[in-house]
Image (cartoon, rainbow, N blue to C red; front, side, top):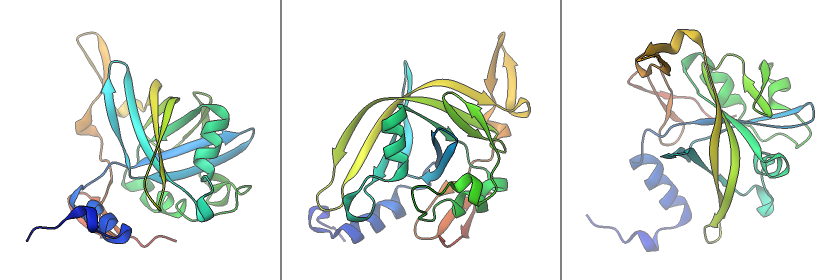
Length: 200
């Protein structure tokens, strides 16, 4: 079978990409305005380059084309923190995908402890967090628009139990991490298994 991808509906293209481009890393992004903490997961998220260390996150428009809270806040502040999601945080991360009013904090609503970090906050239970500075944005899409945010990683926090010292430098040991990946539909990649966790 061969498909002309240019003729697919938005829904069918989304289903195809999220099924085939998998597992996808999850950026559990924290953005802040004063003492208000916004926390939301994004699976259109990935590394971009290493000199300097950079990453990207694609944020779809909200209802009516309005920017989602994450995009609005990172535009206001120019910073965000991407937290690593591991199995112990999976259910709480999934809860934060709920659409809450802009003035309601996911961290407070779901009792997720945060710690000030890199101009925003990091999730206290996350074993790795990347403090990021926004470099630029790009807009893509036809009817369903997305903003691709390009950011430089300026600060890294890692728990002591995932850090090793090699050649005099401390590095994060990937063998000590257990990142959760995003699959299609309601599924996540967890310990080599497909685990369903419906969005709230």
